[in-house]
Image (cartoon, rainbow, N blue to C red; front, side, top):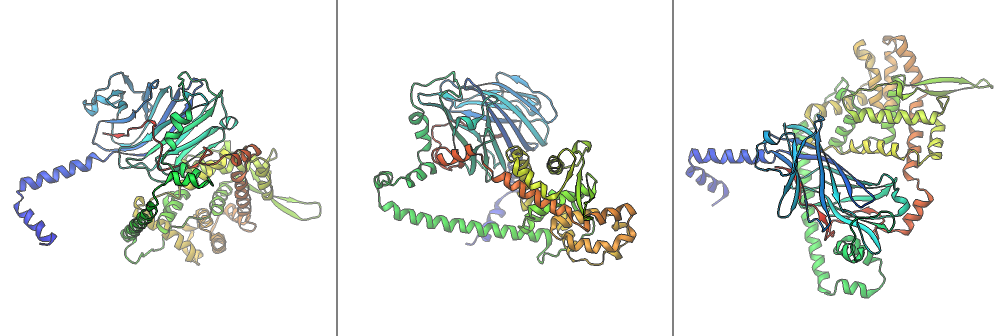
Length: 587
């Protein structure tokens, strides 16, 4: 009997009441999984006595189901405990702290309250989720005895994030001490249970995911510090290596790397004594390859279907003449990448923001005549503090202000800048501008992480249609004075799309329709495209900042390896014996 026939028989024997009951159960189940954490940023301040102040920012989409959020802290070692819980949200309200949390209360009863729920496994930090919608929760607590003293070193192996939900898109961890720069003490760092990276940079240890994290995965971090950096209140009369490190590294890829670098054949035999396992491993690899190959095909099919939902079977994209997504370059960049799989060049994107600064007269062109009668064009960079940008997308404001600030600093006290000076300035000051460059890179990278499923149909047609319009249309002068007023946005987007020269040429036909001030502005940016030269020089200087390493950092990298805690990508396996963890989310 085929599936269709069985379904028909079952349906005939179900009463209307049973059918209604099934539908209600399905509806309830769908609501039960409505709340979801989208992004988590966690800061861990290590105190001299070994305690840690943990601050978490959790951005979530809260449904009408459920009553509370929670963070489990199970498996705490002797000497560890959680205290000083504080919770607030995006409204600024500080939640009332209850020493004993009642999980069985209603949503209304838990609103603006938080507390400790003691279970057989350990403590859970709980708070009322309040109103549905996009919410941001700020959770702060102290982990007493996180970093413990051992005979040869001090350290910890702790799970700082795990989820019981359908998954979280982005999680970052930052470890720091207010009065200690980590590089000076050369701590060792490892991370387990997830796909991510961990490194010691700029006086801090930073860990982040490189892939979606879901239920069953964790961010377990192990750190080892030399004696004398901290003075832990909790001390263990044993070695960190045997009590913590060896247990955590067992079964991890860190141990595998160490084995690969070991020339002794006895180490390899001891690690894998059964020769027949090699053949079995090959078979398993083949099965895994086949399985994941099927997943790739499945993902491709899903993407094709989503594109059909957006554009139709023939991907029919019509010209779109208005400025898309309210002029938001970052969102347009993200949408184009999600649909086409191509990311606009960093040079072009920075050039687009540079041009926008010039069109807003935050950067102006000044011509200087030399003694020999020749002349050169310079950039007058006005003080960024004079301008108050209030764009809806704060990332858009931040990246434009950051780029503006870099130009302003490079220009010096006279605020006049030759494009060729920019690269030299950042070559001479690479360490000073690491944070600024990483902020810009982080924003540009995040704009390339938009998922196709989150792209709205109207926005997709607007962005791709506008790009097509600018690339193909050659008779802008026939389109009337109303659209002529949009020439600044046309040029800005065309620069990011990499077609500014073509569009600038077509825009020249609009000159009779433009105000005199716009004609002068157009001539200043089109006759000698300084914004391109400046952006290229700036990005080249930023690349030097990205690549630069101090002598101490080079020495540290050469003396450290990933397996011995020098940082790098995490190990999905291993991490045994850790404290903390147990899941988090909403219920």
